[in-house]
Amino acid sequence: MANPKICVSLEETTVKAMVDEAARAGIQGANMIEVRFDRLYLKKPQAIISEDAEGNRVSTMLPVNEWPVLDFEEVDVEKSIAALKEAIALPVIFSVRAVRDGGHFSGDEKQRLVILQAAIDSEVKWIDIELSIEDKSRKALVKSAKAANCQIIASQHDMNGTPSSDEIVTFVTSNGDSGDIVKFCSTLKDHQDALQLVDAANTLSAQDSTPPYSIMALGNGGDWTRIHAPTLGQDLVYATMRDEFRLSDKGLVNVRDLQDAWRLLEY
Image 1 (cartoon, helix red, strand yellow):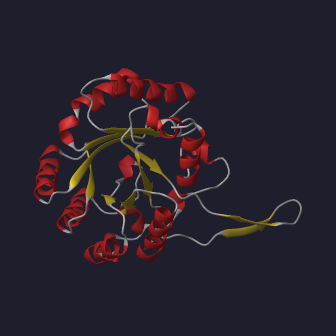
Image 2 (tube, rainbow, N blue to C red):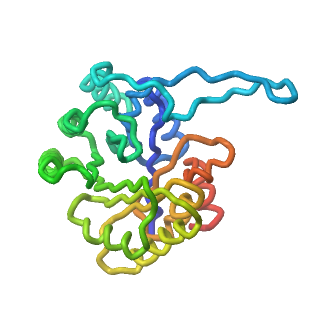
C-alpha cells in the first residue's frame, strides 16, 4: 500500500513568502500544498531581540494570536489567488480558516465564503469546505466545486478538546458524502486524548467501507497519527516547514522529519 500523500500547510503571511515556502516544501518532498489564505490577513511583526543571562542575543517572536490583523479590504483577493495559482506548481488545497476554527480571517462569514467561491472559480485543485459552514451556504459551495472538478476536503476543527474514539469514527463515516476526504482536527489535553485519535484511526482502517480520511490534533501527542499514518489508513497527512525545538509538543511534524520517520519505521 502506498504511503499517504503529504500536504505542507503554508505559514507565511505574504504571497511572495508563501510561494517561496511552497517551492521549498516541494524540494523537501511534499505532494501537496495547503494555502492558508487567512494568514495573508496577518501582519508579521519584527522579532524582539534581547539578551539572556550569559549576554547572548536572543530573538523571540510574539505569539501569532498577538500579531496585528489587516482589514478585509487590505488584501486583493483575486490578484492574490491568481498570483498563488500561477507560481505554485504542486496541487493546492485552498483554505480560509475562520477564527472559530483556529484561523485568522479578519472579515465576516459572508466575506469568507466569497473568497472560497473565488478560489473555486480559479479552478484550484482542492478546496477545504468546513462542515461548520451554514448548510445552505455549504451546499452552494459544494455544488460549485463539483461543477469545477474541484475536490473537497470536508473538515471539522474542534478547538475545545477531543471527543471519544467512537465519536470520531462516527463523524468520519457519517460525513463520507460531504467531501472527497474527511478531515478531523482536535485539540489535545493529554496523551489519553491522543490515544482516542489512534484508536479511531485503527478502527476506521479495519472497516471495509471507510471514506478517505485524515485525522490529527494539536498538542503533545498530536503527531502520533501523523507519524504512524501509513499503518492507520490515513490518506493525507499535514506537515509543516517549521523545525524549531520541541515541535512535537505542538502536535506538528516537519515534512522532512516525517519522511525520515516513515523510512526508519519501514512504512
